[in-house]
Length: 211
Ligand code: HEM
Image (tube, rainbow, N blue to C red; front, side):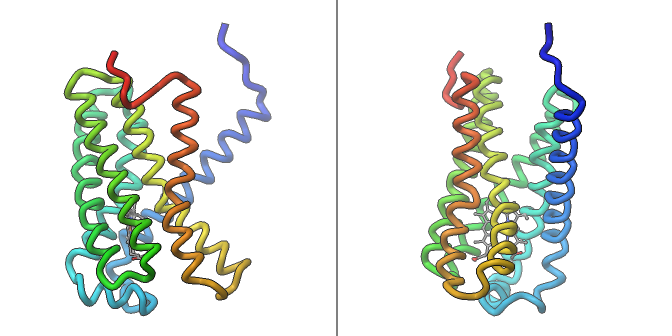
C-alpha cells in the first residue's frame, strides 16, 4: 500500500515547491534580461562585458535558459515525446552556457578563488552532461537519470550563488566581500551537488550504474 502523506505535510511540500519555482523563475528572467542591464553592472563585471561583448551576454542568456530548460526536461521525463526534444535543446544550451563560462570566469577575474570555483563548476557541469548523454546512448536510463539529477544540482548553484550574495549584503555588509565572493563561487554549487550525491546513494542510484 502506498504511504499516506498528511495534508499538512503535503501543504508544506507544495509551499516549498512554489517558493523554489518562483525564485528560480525570477533568477532566470533576470539573467535573460541582464544583457540589457550591463550599464548598471558593478565595475568588476562591467569590465568583462567590455572585453567579452558577445561571449558574456551569450553566457547570461543561455545560463538563464538553462534554469528553465533543465527542470522542464526532468519534469517531462515520463513523456518521451516531450522529454527528447526538450532534453536535446537543454543539452545544447548547457553546452554553450558551460563553455562560455570559462572565458567569463578567467578573463579579468573578480578574484582568483572565484575564477577557479566557477571554472570547476563549469567543468563538473559539462562532464555530467557528457556522462548523461553517453549513458542514454548506451541504453542505461537509470545511470542517465542519476547523471542528469547531479547536473541539475550543479545548475542550481547559479541560484544559490545569488541567494548567498543577497544574504551577505543584508547580514555581512561589505567587509571581506571578495573572500566571501570566492567562497560563494565554490559552495553555491558543491553543496547541492553533494546533497544530491548523498540522496542518490541512499536510493541506490549511480551515474556509473552499468545495468
Ligand atoms: C553552472 C555553471 C555556470 C558557471 C560556471 C558560470 C560562471 C559565471 C561567471 C564566471 C560569471 C561572471 C562572474 C565572475 O566572474 O565573478 C557569470 C556571470 C553570470 N552568469 Fe553564470 N555561470 C554558470 C551558470 C549560469 C546560470 C545557470 C545562469 C542563470 C541564471 C547564469 C547567469 C549569469 C549571469 C546573468 C551573469 C551576469 C552577472 C550576474 O548576474 O551575476 N550563469 N557566470
